Amino acid sequence: MKKKPFVKILSLALAAITLFVLCACGTAASSPAAGPVSDAAPTEASAASNGVLDEIKASGELHITLSPDFAPMEFIDSSKDGQEQYVGLDVFLAKYIADYIGVKLVIEPMSFDACQTAVYTASVPMSVSGYVWTEERAESYEISDYYYDGDNKIEPVILIRTADAEKYTSSEDFNGVDIGAQNASLQMQLVTSQLPDANPVAVGDVGTGVLELQNGSIEALAVAKGNAEIIMDANPDLVLCPWEFTITEETEAFVILITKGETALLNVVNEA
Image (tube, rainbow, N blue to C red):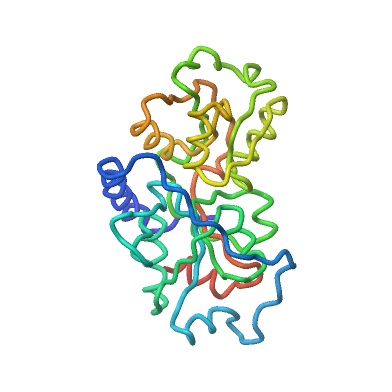
């Protein structure tokens, strides 16, 4: 799987977006509640030779899902409304892809796990929401080329309260401890596999997880490093835990999820 040719452009965009977040935002906004999503298995691609890509071109709209609680990748700008309120690097990328296809971008905000379900069931053909490659996702979706390596900003980390900075320094320190992470996320997968004696707690969105950490409902929160840096800037009562997850090269860059079988759309995304 190769990296996208516009990684440098995205890196510049991320720098500008991060500056905006640090100047304008506090704790990450909560994502809107997910709409109803079927649990049915994905349907077969359209009989048309290019599947859903032909439908996208015919309708003039590319519908995507994202979970806007992951600054600076995707978040809500409260000074705007409608589709314009969704901003961030992933939104920048999605607009770029829509422009490349020659259609209008339509964002359907959902919780992180609902985004994946929507693409799996073909309710929405594509999701751009800070995903990393995992074996499970590779089996369930078409996965794009890597588009941003993040300069280690993607690395999963654990946030703890500043008062507990000396309390959690090794994996054993998390035995029996409630650790929050978004459901269906890499962070949740790593908490479960690498901290098997901890108690994983699903949080609806990152903003809610931060509040639960601050009020003591959970003792730690697993997030991406870039997200953690922004959270800590707005919340000095939180710090990074010195213990680190072990990650593979495949999880060090972001990818786009596309409904399984929609290879024509996948090819266009990789060409963009």
